[in-house]
Picture 1 (cartoon, rainbow, N blue to C red):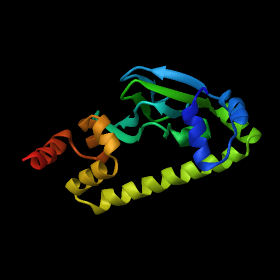
Picture 2: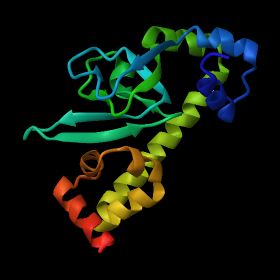
Picture 3: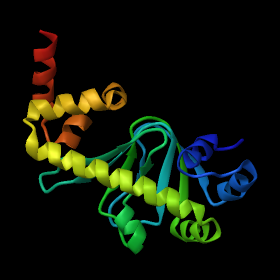
Picture 4: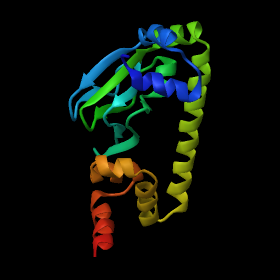
Length: 192
């Protein structure tokens, strides 16, 4: 079955049979991107969101000092994109870039709307995944205010070892609001 990753993910939250999935699958476009490729960038109309079937990506912006500030990572079975700009059909403020060679399933805004109309079960799927993502964002923000920088780093690496093994340390530092040098100091303390 083509795009079995998405089929399995849907079925974690709802019940989609294989025949129905074949029709659902036609709403998505498979995109294969190499390592360190920009998928979209600021000022482009945000007309796509992406399901990561394979690989690793990040969503980031560039601050006034020219520093990359990572907002989100995406690995297998995660969605990535500027969801507010997608919803509003407005220009994005973010870059989406592959960290590894990746297989993405892209859906346009028009196809997304048609998909939800034709398959109401997927309304529930997306509601649940958005709730989980929003809850994770709130949890992250609480940790940003509550923990010391060192505690924040260890909390991240302990709870998300799949990222600390695949994502360069400078991107983890960016995501946590730390400098790469500080992350290196923390790691050196642990090794000694």
